[in-house]
Image (cartoon, rainbow, N blue to C red; front, side):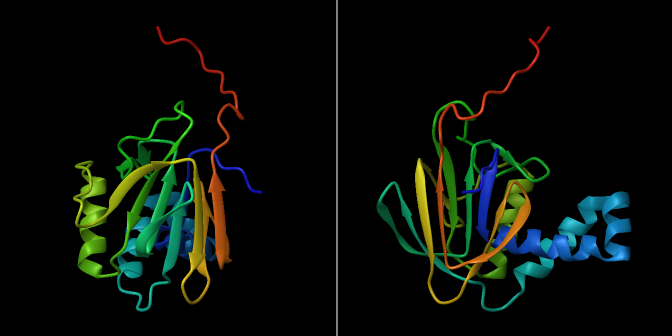
Amino acid sequence: PEPFLAMAGLGFDAAIAERIGRRRASGWGKWLYRIQADLLYVTAGVTQLFVPGQPRFELRADGEKIEGTAVAVIASNTRTYAKSMLLTPEARVDDGALELYVRRSANPLVGAVSLVVAQLRWGCPGWVARTRRMVTLRARASARPFPWQLDGGSMGRAGCVELSIDPGALRLIAPNAP
């Protein structure tokens, strides 16, 4: 078991996290990340849109099979994601559930629309991706292992990943707002 605080990602965004990790390990990438991390994320995301043969996986949320296969999944406990992108607008840290974002199409145009509307915080059209609430998720590779990440850190590749939320497992203490 690996705990995460805000979100877990499978497929597309996890491949970006892998790519960023590799770039940050190089001298040039480490320097660029310090100077302009946004540019590194944009180039990694655009590059990933055109990678052929995106890994696909099957999903079960709360024991129910989700129709079709996916290329990108975010299970989030927060409304915003990666540089304030809006993918899971109904997610709440205090409700005991995760909001699931599922994109099925590997088409670069659909992926680009997904990124643009998320960055503009418009909410994703249903033809691009679907969202739903869940407590448990099981993702199984359709053919080959898929990348996955927790809170933006690459976790490598897996043939199967199970996620769940443990309500009340972490207690956050914050000062009262004035």
